[in-house]
Amino acid sequence: MTPSNALLIVLFTVAFRVEWSKARARSERWREEVMILREGMRRTLESLQFFKKMWSSLGAPSNLVVLSQDPIVREGITAYAMYQSHIFTSLHHRFQSMWSGLEKEGDLITEPMPVVSEEALLELQGDDI
Image (tube, rainbow, N blue to C red):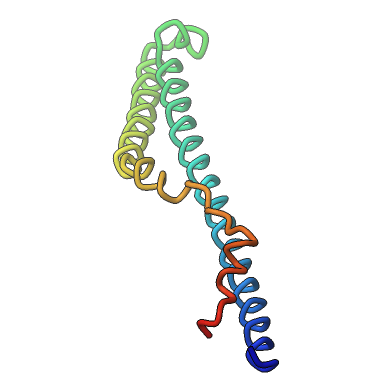
């Protein structure tokens, strides 16, 4: 092996390691982004469920007596509460159906990236250049 070939091998190895490190860092950032998005989706569904239950309970007869004695006002409060509950239920169902298959597809993304050993990198330094 001549000195120029040895220098090329070293330069190739260094360049390969730099590019591999950059790719690994990008992969880790995207993996983290997927985790953040999944958590955001989970929290969104949970919040929509909470607001649906909150509006449903506000329209319950036991809560209406506290809010107003006027039957017309209670009827309006009930209608508004049920309408809001329906909106949050619809949003919950819509988002849930939009996001239903993403957990399965995302499993491929969250698999850990294999780590290349030092020995494997050294094997690439052969006379193939």
